[in-house]
Length: 280
Ligand code: SF4
Ligand code: SF4
Image (tube, rainbow, N blue to C red; front, side, top):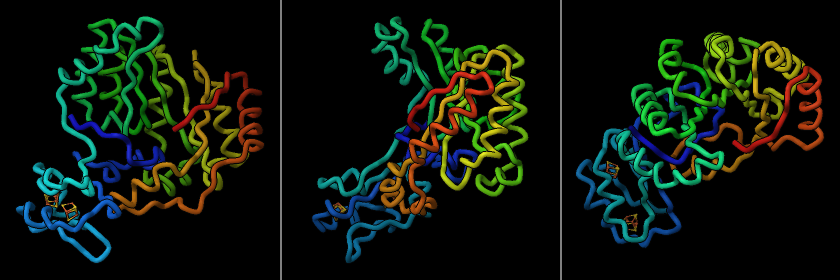
C-alpha cells in the first residue's frame, strides 16, 4: 500500500495516470545549499543541480525506491512524499486513537482515490470493522461495481464525489464518462449504504444552474441519502504541484463566492436534501 498526503485536487481523481503509483520526490529549491551530495548519491544519474536549484529526471525517478538523493539531503531540499505501508502497519497507527473513535470518530480512507488500490482498501476496511472501528470511504466512484460490492459491507459511510451530471462535460473536464460513477452510486443507495454526496464547486466548470439542478434531482432520487456537502474549490495544492513538476491546470480559477455557494445550497435544499459545507 502507498500512502501520501494528497498532492492532487480531487478534480483529477478519475484519472489513474494523474496519481502517483508510489512515493514521489518533492523539490524545495530555496532550501538548497548546493552541496552536490544528491548528484553523487543518485545511482541513476537522475539527480541534477541546476542554476535555480535541485532538479530531477522524473521518468527515471518513477521507478526509484531508494530515494538516495533525499536521504543524503541534510537541507531537506529534496523530500519523499508518501510511504509504503501494510494493512497491519496502518491498523497499528489507527488503533492509537481508538479511545477517540468511541465518541463518534473513526477512520476515513481518502486520497487520491482509495479504490485505485482495491486489495489494500478491502483489507484495511475489513480489519478496521473487525476491530469495531467506524469506517468512511471517500471515493470518486470511478471503479468497478465488483470492487465496491466487495467492500461496501465494511463501509459505514460513503463520501461519494459527484462533479458533473452531463456526460460529455464530465468527459471533457475529467477525461472519463460519468456513467459508471452514477450507476455505482445508485447501486450503493439501492443496497442501503449510508451515503454523503460531496460536490466540489469549481467556478466556470460545474457551478452553473443546469448542473446544480441536475445534481439536486440526483440527490432527491437517492434513497436514504445522508445529505449533500459542498466543497468550495481552492488552490491550496498549487504549490505542491510545482514541487512535483506537475502542471496545475486551474491556476486562474478563483474560489466560488459565498453568494454563489448560498444559491447552490438553496437549489439543493429545495429538493429536500440536507446541505452542508466542507473542505476538500
Ligand atoms: S543534497 Fe540537497 S542541499 Fe545538497 S545540492 Fe542536493 S538538493 Fe541541494
Ligand atoms: S528519486 Fe531516485 S532516481 Fe530520482 S533523483 Fe532521487 S535517487 Fe535519483
